[in-house]
Amino acid sequence: MAAVFLVTLYEYSPLFYIAVVFVCFLVTSGLVLGWFGWDVPVILRNSEETESSATVCQKQMRQVKNPFSLEVTSPEVASLASGVALVLDCLEDCLLTCYWGCSVQKLHAALQKHAYCLRIKTPRAFEDAVQDEYLYRQQYRIKKTDKLGKSCVLPAEAQITELGPVPRSRYPLVALLTLADEEDREIYDIISMVSIIHVPDDSYRLSCRILYQYLLLDQGQFHDLKQLFMSANSISPPSSHPPSGERTEDRVLLEKAGLAEDDPEPVDENSKDCIVCQNRAVNWVLLPCRHTCLCDECVKYFQQCPMCRQFVRESFPLHSQKE
Ligand SMILES: [Zn+2]
Ligand SMILES: [Zn+2]
Image (tube, rainbow, N blue to C red; front, side, top):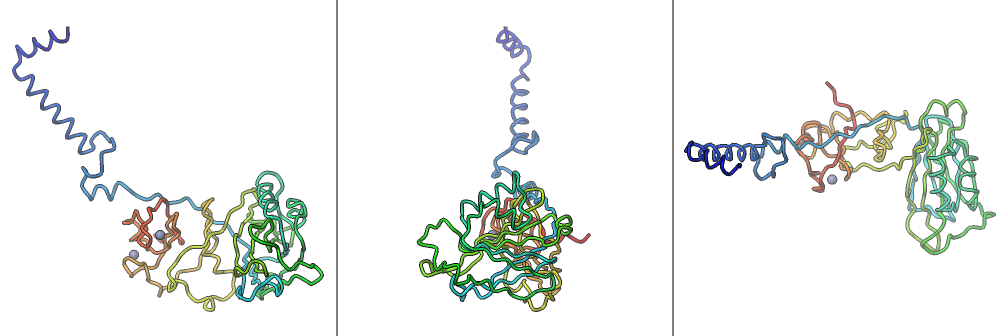
């Protein structure tokens, strides 16, 4: 039936073929130029169109205030025998509880318990969560005005000289920071910080370092703090910042939840060191590589990190852009 119709059409209308060829031409042009919104191989599009259509998505951020800060000073001299020097800079009065030889398995189970049922707000809650699986416990009260270092030394009576060969079932030191006052726990979303610290001993000489730092939230989440990678000249020396709650740890990011640290340090007017234009202040963090090397203008032009060439999946600004 259709064939008869086409044959009739052909006989009576010599223009039919011309029309068919023209329609085919239109459809092909439409496909190539992307009129129908289908994905066309990039090679067929012109370069300007490619740049504008592929933008890196911006990560949704939420600011939270972190009352805790803990760092290890002079890690090269720290050891299980001589102790570890910690620097604490907290916004409120805190309790620092050091658990020496804390079970790896129980600690990670405790973090899961925090997420599902038992919130770790106090040292007692932590001890319940790890089922008292640690070798020795020390506690210090840290005043918010104290910006001094705290030396944590394992006393001789603990009789712990080494934790055996690797792989180990215990972390050398787990430092738990919790808010000392009941009222403060209502103010902050972040209720405690767990720092897992490697401390060298006779059987394993790797130098002292913080392995992980987890921030525990009142709502049950916990987040692994990560470092950002910035060029050295964009970070002002710590001495130029008075200890007024602005801490170097402001440059950490909470990658998993997309939480930004509170109160980012104001960028120094002199630090115009975007690695591309060398003219404006660095402001953008690229994920997943965490390089922080682009300014507000240059970030638009990059789908790959200019430092490591890794494709940028998401990005977020350190400071919200001024209108
Ligand atoms: Zn720039
Ligand atoms: Zn990178």
